[in-house]
Length: 100
Image (cartoon, rainbow, N blue to C red; front, side):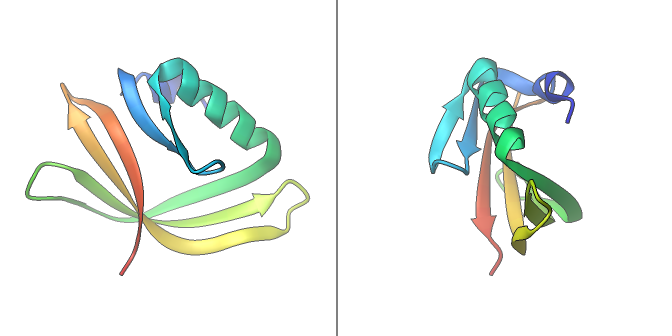
Protein backbone atom coordinates (compact mmCIF):
# COMPACT_ATOMS: atom_id res chain seq x y z
CA UNK A 1 0.00 0.00 0.00
CA UNK A 2 2.88 2.30 -0.75
CA UNK A 3 0.92 4.78 -2.84
CA UNK A 4 3.92 7.02 -3.45
CA UNK A 5 5.99 4.16 -4.84
CA UNK A 6 3.13 2.98 -7.08
CA UNK A 7 2.62 6.48 -8.45
CA UNK A 8 6.31 6.50 -9.40
CA UNK A 9 5.47 3.93 -12.09
CA UNK A 10 2.68 6.09 -13.54
CA UNK A 11 2.59 9.00 -15.94
CA UNK A 12 1.81 12.32 -14.28
CA UNK A 13 -1.47 12.41 -16.24
CA UNK A 14 -2.38 8.76 -15.60
CA UNK A 15 -6.00 7.75 -16.25
CA UNK A 16 -7.16 5.26 -13.59
CA UNK A 17 -10.53 3.63 -12.89
CA UNK A 18 -12.33 4.66 -9.71
CA UNK A 19 -14.09 1.36 -9.12
CA UNK A 20 -15.98 2.60 -6.06
CA UNK A 21 -17.78 5.38 -7.91
CA UNK A 22 -17.70 4.10 -11.49
CA UNK A 23 -15.67 7.12 -12.63
CA UNK A 24 -12.05 7.78 -13.56
CA UNK A 25 -9.23 9.41 -11.60
CA UNK A 26 -6.81 11.56 -13.61
CA UNK A 27 -3.31 12.40 -12.49
CA UNK A 28 -1.30 11.47 -9.43
CA UNK A 29 -3.26 13.60 -6.97
CA UNK A 30 -6.64 12.14 -7.94
CA UNK A 31 -5.30 8.56 -7.95
CA UNK A 32 -3.78 9.11 -4.49
CA UNK A 33 -7.08 10.51 -3.18
CA UNK A 34 -8.99 7.58 -4.70
CA UNK A 35 -6.68 4.98 -3.17
CA UNK A 36 -6.67 6.65 0.25
CA UNK A 37 -10.48 6.71 0.19
CA UNK A 38 -10.66 3.11 -1.03
CA UNK A 39 -8.38 1.83 1.73
CA UNK A 40 -10.51 3.67 4.30
CA UNK A 41 -13.64 1.66 3.37
CA UNK A 42 -12.45 -1.69 1.93
CA UNK A 43 -9.50 -4.06 2.16
CA UNK A 44 -8.62 -5.17 -1.39
CA UNK A 45 -6.16 -7.97 -2.15
CA UNK A 46 -5.14 -8.61 -5.75
CA UNK A 47 -3.01 -11.61 -6.74
CA UNK A 48 -1.69 -11.78 -10.35
CA UNK A 49 -2.32 -15.17 -11.99
CA UNK A 50 -1.08 -14.51 -15.53
CA UNK A 51 0.37 -11.80 -17.73
CA UNK A 52 0.59 -11.22 -21.48
CA UNK A 53 1.19 -8.37 -23.88
CA UNK A 54 -1.47 -7.61 -26.47
CA UNK A 55 -0.72 -7.00 -30.14
CA UNK A 56 -1.09 -3.25 -29.55
CA UNK A 57 1.42 -3.26 -26.68
CA UNK A 58 -0.91 -3.22 -23.70
CA UNK A 59 0.12 -5.25 -20.67
CA UNK A 60 -2.73 -7.59 -19.72
CA UNK A 61 -2.72 -9.08 -16.22
CA UNK A 62 -5.28 -11.60 -14.98
CA UNK A 63 -5.74 -11.14 -11.24
CA UNK A 64 -7.68 -12.93 -8.53
CA UNK A 65 -9.16 -10.21 -6.38
CA UNK A 66 -10.67 -10.58 -2.95
CA UNK A 67 -12.31 -7.42 -1.66
CA UNK A 68 -13.22 -7.42 2.01
CA UNK A 69 -15.18 -5.00 4.12
CA UNK A 70 -13.08 -3.61 6.95
CA UNK A 71 -14.74 -6.09 9.34
CA UNK A 72 -13.23 -8.92 7.24
CA UNK A 73 -16.37 -10.12 5.47
CA UNK A 74 -15.93 -10.76 1.76
CA UNK A 75 -17.55 -8.22 -0.56
CA UNK A 76 -16.21 -9.66 -3.84
CA UNK A 77 -14.12 -12.69 -4.84
CA UNK A 78 -13.41 -13.17 -8.55
CA UNK A 79 -10.87 -13.06 -11.32
CA UNK A 80 -10.68 -9.92 -13.45
CA UNK A 81 -8.32 -8.56 -16.06
CA UNK A 82 -6.22 -5.44 -15.52
CA UNK A 83 -5.17 -3.83 -18.79
CA UNK A 84 -2.32 -1.32 -18.67
CA UNK A 85 -1.58 1.12 -21.47
CA UNK A 86 2.02 2.23 -21.31
CA UNK A 87 3.65 5.46 -22.49
CA UNK A 88 7.33 6.30 -22.11
CA UNK A 89 7.79 3.19 -19.94
CA UNK A 90 5.12 4.33 -17.44
CA UNK A 91 1.48 3.39 -16.91
CA UNK A 92 -0.66 5.93 -18.76
CA UNK A 93 -4.03 4.17 -18.29
CA UNK A 94 -5.48 1.19 -16.47
CA UNK A 95 -8.76 -0.56 -17.20
CA UNK A 96 -10.51 -3.41 -15.41
CA UNK A 97 -12.31 -5.94 -17.60
CA UNK A 98 -14.31 -9.06 -16.95
CA UNK A 99 -12.64 -12.35 -17.76
CA UNK A 100 -14.55 -14.23 -20.46
